[in-house]
Image 1 (cartoon, rainbow, N blue to C red):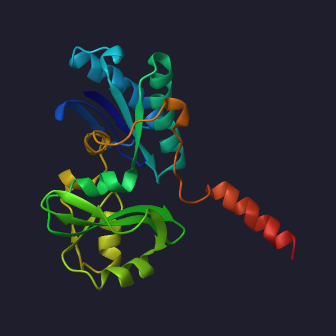
Image 2 (tube, rainbow, N blue to C red):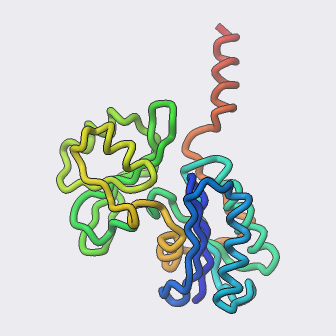
Length: 228
């Protein structure tokens, strides 16, 4: 089975193609380019370099969130467009689970974190044992202080995801941080998780934001103040 996966939930973006679990190629860009500029050219380049056509792809995979509202929409749009054109089945994968997957070989608690701003992080906790991850919490938005309190009772904690360095500093170095090459959510991890997931149609794909967009939160807060 050939899978084309896209990860565009944060500042970095990546695209990969796998075949029966083997990584044929991956593009990972963390250089500040907007995803609308980088994702589709990366897809086209990978297909060209692997001598494949989009019709050769058996499954499409995408990180569904949480993450950047704009980034998630761009990635979803690319996958939906490819899926609708050739009726290719799709899989949506939790961004936080993809972030944790890079440390699944460890023995302990993997804490996947992304900066959610407004004093919060997007987070999920996983237990890692010899390559097998077990989810401990749902994807959620949580304050750094509440997360620190929860982690204080756990052993062998490693922080992963693009918010790991920020949280590591906030937590005063109490927990280890995944090494740079394993830290980020990547298309290769999305593809790996998509291998055993139940596929859906492109039209059923939707982002999982966890929180309302900032503009919507501000609008509701304004309405709340005006009603007082």
